[in-house]
Image (cartoon, rainbow, N blue to C red):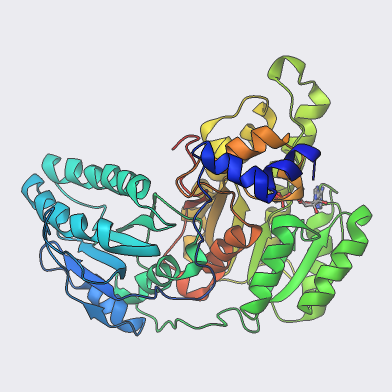
Amino acid sequence: MSALEKAFTSAPGRAISRKAGLKDPPRLRRGRSWPAGAIVLGTVGHGSLVADTLTLLGRTVESPVVDAGDDAPGYGSKIGALVVDATELRTIDQLETLRALLRPAVRGIEGAGRIVIVAREDVDGWEAASVARALDGINRTVAKELRGGATSTLLWTTGDTVSSDLMSTLGFVLQGRSAFVDGQAWHVGHAGDVHREFTAAPLAGRTVIVTGAARGIGAAIARTIARDGADVIAVDIPPAGEALAAVANEVGGVAVQLDITKPDAGRVLAEVVAQRGKGLHGVVHNAGITRDKMLVNTDAARWASVLEVNLAAQLRINDVLLDPETDGGLDDGGRLIGIASTSGLAGNKGQTNYAASKAGVAGLVQAMAPDLSARDITVNAVAPGFIETEMTGKIPFVQREIFRRSNSLTQGGRPVDVAETIAYLLDPASQAVTGQVVRVCGQNLVGA
Ligand SMILES: NC(=O)c1ccc[n+]([C@@H]2O[C@H](COP(=O)([O-])OP(=O)(O)OC[C@H]3O[C@@H](n4cnc5c(N)ncnc54)[C@H](O)[C@@H]3O)[C@@H](O)[C@H]2O)c1
């Protein structure tokens, strides 16, 4: 910690920053905790998808207060969440119903509470299409207006989506696992009418490879998915061997010292999987590097190293692990997860190489998802914003403090926040979620 950082985070330093109008950031709710207050279900139209999903999740619901005006009491005590079934919303007039549902809830929501809007993406007609898009604007704005660590999320479904498709996603969003996911929208399709469960150990007996697992986000992924029952194959470069072994021991997994850019990396990983003899449920391509410079100072070596580690290596590894002939390859019904970045999605000065690689990851998962759907393999990415790790610890303190506060939750995320989102995507119950890039950024203003 630099002298400046120490001064800033000391008691007098914090008092000065409060005087300057910088409030202490709100406490976020984390882990598998549900909201403390009631979950309120509102509907626009007569859709039952959300009610059925909440029943599957074992949640009881209360009825909404509608359009409590300035003087009306609204909710007597704070509510934990408002979940709106907007799957039958098609007209501008119906948006008024949504406004009337949201208005009292925005004021009545508890700290770290949730607003969730569930809507249909496959709607016909110009008005319905524009109204669907209006929901995106509403969600992003409500997320910015909420206080106290409460978040807002929009979930897109299709006419085929059933409650067992939506269950893991709605459970994730309502629970503390989604603490740093705010103002986001993603898609939940349909994955067949198989029985799925919402459990605390969804990865029990399943093997998952995590690259870059020696520290930071990768170590948090290893710990979080081990909590969820996974058998972890933890991968990192040989110089990080000691830290890697410590993480692997802690989670009861196996450490593999391997530079993922080695041409035979995929084969080495497949051999480890084959030796463990439990198949391969998932691969989390977390290893990543930055070599920041303005483009005018970016030479070919700086360019190549970042694209090699962050993008090309995972394509090569995927090629091997997706080959049905590979002993130790990815199982049908498996999971591939990439790590993008808000810098990649929005662009970031001094990071052309990194942005190329991270936007490339987003493009990769979107292209792969439909191609692998016949094997029930889902492919998704998580795009972290500012997360407190050694990588971001290298950013000068004042700039780091600005980055921390430049999101709706006014703080940096923790590695576990990224890890929880990955664990949700790895869950067998998340079968209906594929080709998505979920930002874990507290609604970062960068590219918001
Ligand atoms: N920290 C953030 O705010 C942030 C934001 C957006 C995206 N990300 C992404 O999240 C991922 C993890 O980031 P982090 O902050 O934990 O980084 P980190 O630097 O703390 O950890 C990265 C790990 O990857 C390993 N690694 C690097 N090159 C490797 C290689 N060739 N083979 C095997 N392992 C290799 C490193 O040894 C290290 O242990 C990266 O892909 C990063 O780009 C991080």
